Amino acid sequence: MALAEGWPDEPDTLPLLKTLAQLGESDCLRRTAVRALAERWPHDPALLPLLKNLAQFESDESVRSWALEQLALRWSQTSGMFEFLYRCAVTQSFERQYDFEDNPRLKALVGIVQHYPHHPETQPLLQDRLAHDPDDKVREFASEQLKQFTIEN
Image (spheres, rainbow, N blue to C red):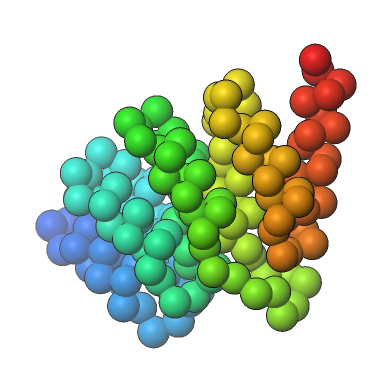
């Protein structure tokens, strides 16, 4: 986002991006603001709660997905992040209408596999998603990852 790149030190840039991430007129604008915030201001103490809130309660699934992706990418070492992603992988509402749509449950699951592959609950979660997730793409991902676990062990 040009605003974050061009004026990162301006005192109004960070608050404006936080507002755009939550209240921007389009999902594209909100997604872009989420990414700019996570890339430029990962140490802002208000950002983690903001992204968690967006990941859970944003009405647009693509914004929820982007928030989850950024949380997994930049805050995987934060206490409680595995549990947060786990809950999102199991409870996020999503019903695929088009093949290109981002599923927040899948983004959370990808984050878990990438950042917590050896966590004792990762493989059981994949087994659960393979057996119970209503989305084909989540089940396919879980199946592929479980095969990888079998090959590696």
